Length: 503
Image (cartoon, rainbow, N blue to C red; front, side, top):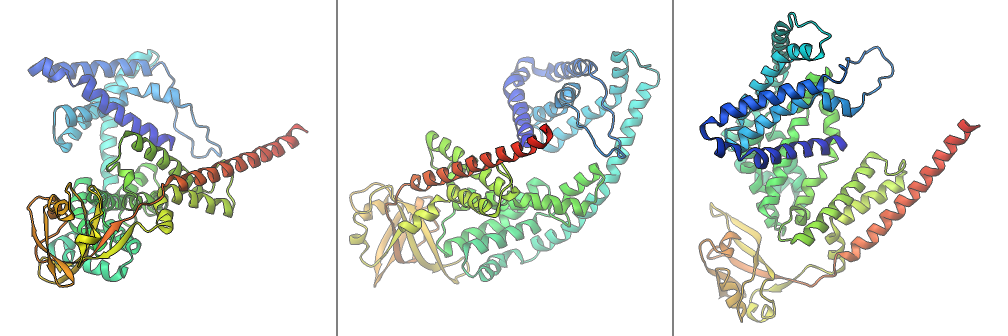
């Protein structure tokens, strides 16, 4: 966790520093910006390398040693600060020069090659206790060794990418993608959770061996519509951004999923381990975070949709506590080693903090179903700004019967017809039901996939529900009691270990 946070803050800090701290240099220097910044970058590299030579060289670990002592992190960081400069070059190319990702990475790679060639010579000069003879040649030797090793490590990745490309090409070039929605709907049998699991598995298959951009294009074009259509057919209205984050997350999980797992192959090439075993271990670790995309769907507050700053802070706090509880449950350790009951309690706390609405819905149904035939009377008291749900019978793009649920936020108006008209929707009676007469283009009703001649079977009117705080407070109390109990047990265990050694 500390390593992840450090890397995240480092990348974000580099981006902030480059864009806001150095971005003004380009308009000020004009055409001379490239030359001036290049000279300044080389100068900073030399100064940082000179500063790093004040610390001793860290020797490689001896594989025959039974106990390896890790060096302090501070000296390592200070001795290798110049390695941050290629990141700055990359961010500069992306954010300031607005270059393509490939070209930005190319310039960063060129600068890394310059560093590899010159580092032995400069280090020998700055340390003064080493001869500079042959150091420049050694830099070129190191560069060639690195390029040869990198080429060898890429062989397995290239084979995995080519194999995965066969599957992705077969899906994208045939009609398989067009029937994925029907397959998922049949296999899930109307169960939303099972549908999401199936979509996640398909996204991992479709994302094999693809770079990030291509991964998103493939999974969003093939699988995002599946979640929207199947979810709407079973009464679950999912924001489009949540759908795209869901499929994109599982598409990226293909990078650590065997047998392809390009990231696992790359990590195994660095560590010298077995790629398949590395992929299996990485996949097991990644499964612990697979809960997040499901939360995007079931708890859209995590995406900060329609929340203010105070609510956003609350969402951040609750999400942090919930993910800590889930991590403690999955790893079997909170303040002390968990027993089975404590693991179950931690899982329950994580679920209650993430999905308090699940328990609130058990206390009070979120919607009341009303017939559409006399909607002008039954919906007369529904206020403006309410989220009204429509249970609709219509047709898909090719004329096949289709039932789905749409949701619209009512506009202003004195009557229900005026509130619906403000969303671009006009209704007319059709026997015991109501028919959609017209829908204005680009209106709220149009964005909800409502269209003329659709039959509205019934409406779902929102009910006032108890506040979620009635779930959060008992959950926090339970979590605090569990933490105090584990800390007390941990203290007793530490005391028991200390007594024999004192004796």
